[in-house]
Structures are given as structure tokens and as C-alpha cells.
Image 1 (tube, rainbow, N blue to C red):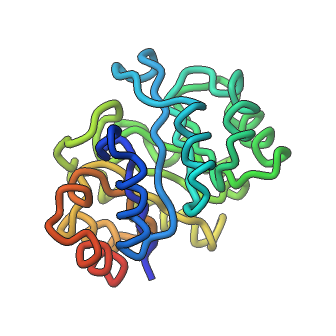
Image 2: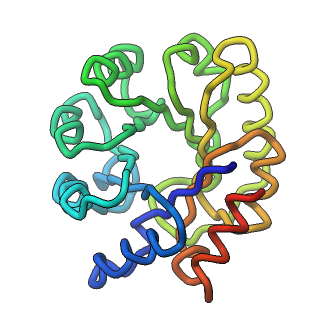
Image 3: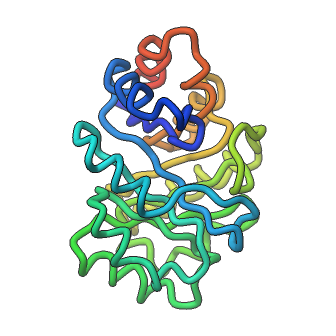
Length: 215
């Protein structure tokens, strides 16, 4: 079954508790928290306080997607919030191997994210060390963007590399995901869909989530 994680970036922050309740009501177990610093991406979003709020809610797993420069400087703070996965950007640090292994030392699953213009080949040397690769299917920084179709080839290429280097690799996709684009991503090898506006704006969140999980 395909894993589905609603992105809190698209939720109504003034009704966060209700929004998280609706995720559970839709039969989902995890949410995706986008952390933006206004430097690596043009937007500023949530930080440690939001991750801690979701931890205190206590009924959902969550992952932290760090869209921040030099993520190594803040790893300990985000690990302390209790995520099941921390994802850093290949483009955001000069020392990716060091950052990946520091996260592993802190006993958290580790992922690396790639922007749409970054080749999959940049991860070949570190792929065996990863739990997840997040393929951005939009340029990061804002929700509600149009899906970039050319990223489908990156998903296929990554799944091909992973077949020999890391067969159990999870491939997560994020950006412009709905039923149609989600299906295309799954057909190309993705198995974890991050959904934003399409989930929170759906007339039946439960039905929407069920259809995505069955792709």
C-alpha cells in the first residue's frame, strides 16, 4: 500500500488540532512538516515549535523536511522533537555524508531531498546509507504549485539506481500531488506521497486518502 502524508503547510493553522484530527479521521497515521528558513527557499514557515506541537498532540507520526541552509547546525533541535524521519536537501550542505551519518547516529531515519533541477546521479555514492529520497516535484518554498512532469523521469531513474544500491529505499514525492499526478508518480516508482492542498481542500478527505493509498 502507498504511504500518504498530508503536508501541514496546506492546513489551516488556526484550526491545527481539528486539521490533525481530520488526518486521523481520513485513516492516515503521519504528517509532513516543512521547515523553511527564508534563505534556502524564499518562504519562511515552521520550526521547532510546530514540530513540538505535533509531538504533544501525540497521535500522529511526523517527518521534518528541512529546507534550510546548513541543516547540520540545527539537527539536534529537530531530533529532540521526535520525528520518525528527517530529510535534508542535497543542495543545502557541503558535507552531505557527514550530515546523513549524524542523523543516523541520533537514531532517526534519514532522507535526502532533491530539487527538480538536481540530477539523481548526485546521490549514487550515498544512496546505500539512506532510508528515503524525497523528489521535489515542484520548486520548493510554496504550496499549491503545479506539478513538474519532467520529474517523473527522475523517479524512474532513482528506482533503477536503488534496485542494486538500496532495494528497500523509500521514494517520497512532494509538490502538486493529487490523484492523477500521484498515480503517475507511483507508476514511475514512488511509494510515499506528500499531499497538500488536494487533501485539505477535498470534499471527502477520507475518500481522497483511500484512493491515494490504493494506487
